[in-house]
Amino acid sequence: MNSVKSDIKDINLADFGQKKIDWAGHLMPVLNLIRRRFAKEKPLEGITIGACLHVTAETANLMLTLTSGGAKVALCASNPLSTKNEVASALVKNHEISTFAICGEDNKTYYSHLQSVLDFHPQITMDDGADLVSLLHQEKKDRLREVLGSSEETTTGVNRLKAMEKNGALKIPIVAVNESDTKHLFDNRYGTGQSSIDGIIRATNILLAGKTLVVAGYGWCGRGVAMRAKGMGANVIVTEVNPIAALEAVMDGFRVMKISQAAKIADIIITATGNKHVIDSNIIDKLKSGAIIANTGHFDVEIDVVYLEKAKKAKRTLRDNLEEYILKTGQKVYLLSSGRLVNLAAAEGHPPDVMDLSFANQALACEWIIKNKGKLKNKVYVLPKRIDQTIARLKLRATGISFDSLTKGQRQYLGSWQEGT
Image (cartoon, rainbow, N blue to C red; front, side, top):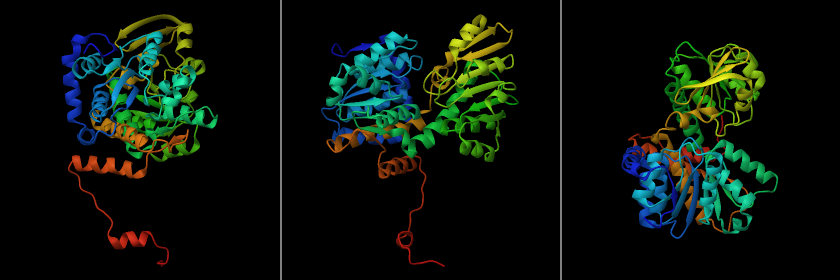
C-alpha cells in the first residue's frame, strides 16, 4: 500500500467503492471471461499501462483485468467531473492501483494527474479523448520511443489522432477502439442514449413527454439520444451538417431543421457533435426563455459557456448540475453540468452491460499491440474483424442467446461467382 502513488479525495470511501465495482463486474461477463484467460496466460506481463479514462466502477473492472494479465497500471481521469471518488479510493486501497482522480478537480490538477501517469513511463497508453497521447507528443517527446502503442475509445479522440496522422505528427501506433463495431454501434448508441437522458432527468427532474427536444448531431451518439428521447414521448428535432445523416434522421421519423430555427422552439437542446460552439452566441440569443441546454460530447467546447457568462445579469445554482442564467435580455437559460458531458457529470455514464463490450475491446487492444510489437507503423489502426466478432460471440453466449451459422454450401456460394440466375 505504501508503494502505491495516488491523489484521491478520501481513502475511507473504499468500501463503498468496492461494492460499486463488484456490482458492475457482475454485469460485465465478457470482460470477466477475458480476465480469467489473462490470469492464466499473463499476456501483459512486465508491461506498464498508463490509462486516462473516466474513473468509474466499469473502468475499475478494466483495470483489474489488465492487472490480472500481469500489467502494472496507472490511472487518471479523462474528465474533471466524471470521477467517482469512492471507486478511485477502492482502486488504491483494495487493489493497489495508482490512481490520480478527484471529482471536480481544477484544470491545473487535471493536467498534473496526466503528468503523474506519464511519470510511470508507460509502454502502452489508453485514452478517452486523446489527452494523454497529446501531452506525450507535446511535452514528453523523449519518452515516445518507450511506447509500443496506444488505444483510443472516443470518436473525438480518434478524430484528433487521425488529424495527427494526416499532419505527420503521430509518432506511435494507435488502435482506434471506437471504430470496432462492438464499440460504437453499442456503446455510443445504446450507452450514450440511455445515460444522457438519465443525466438530463437527474439534473432537472423534468418530464420529457411532450417536450420539444433538439439533438444536435446525428452520429451514433446522437442517434441513441434521439431514439431514447422519442421513446419517452419527447418531440424530437435533429440538426445536422452532414446531408446523409440529416436524410437518415428524416427517414427515421425525426424533424430536421437548422439549429437556428430549432433554438426558437426548443425546450431542451443536447449537443452530440464533437465540434466547437455548436450552441454559440447567436444560438443562445435565439433560445426561448426557459430552455435547457446540455452536452454529451467529450469536451466542454460545444456550448459557448464563456458567452453565457458575459451575457448574464444573474446566475444561481438550483440543483446539482443545474445552473440558471438570467441574461441581460431577460431570458432564462438553464445549463446542465457546466457544459460538460451530462451523462457522466450528472449521471453515472454508460451501464456496465454496454461498457462490457467497449472495455473488452480495450483489453484485447493491449494484447494485440504486444503481439504485433515492432510490426506496427505510426498510424491509426482498427482491431481485426475477428476480434470484434469474438467479443460479440462471447456477449451472446454470456446472455444465453444462440444464433445461426452458415452451412458449408452457403459459405461456398458466398465465395463463388459462377452461380447466378
